[in-house]
Image (cartoon, rainbow, N blue to C red; front, side, top):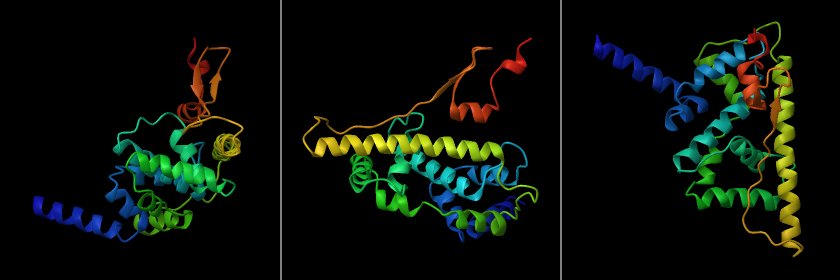
Length: 214
């Protein structure tokens, strides 16, 4: 029986390796992120995420995991900001190079890391073909997911704009600045119950403590 279970586990792993998402999950030891992708895609409530958002979510997890494996202390929003610098369409070449060099100084192979980033099509293939999942027919992108994506993009864009501006001023000799990082940390405080959370924490918990206060 144990041999049969080991054989089945092996066959499942080999099957999942046929998809890029599955291979990256196994090679980078991302645990149960596959189940998280399926949950957020099939959810019909505020936890629902679109395929594009799930691809970003997955890639940011890959980046965060690589940073942590390299011994880096990853602050809230740091992996997301670096991901925007590495992949954003509006990021300057200088800022992208700076982000890559920072990771390389920590011992990361940035080329190999970015080759493990996946597209939303790859996420769709993994979820439908290898996990047998399907999106809710009613709505594949919830309002919460849309707002979460908007806020995250604005935060990443602000970090990228600040990085571009400082890099430009430094290159022109108008600013003295060594290697630097930009962090955009948005805190939300409810005046009624006193709860203070980051935007990510607010979405993850579903709100403040107001409905729990007697």
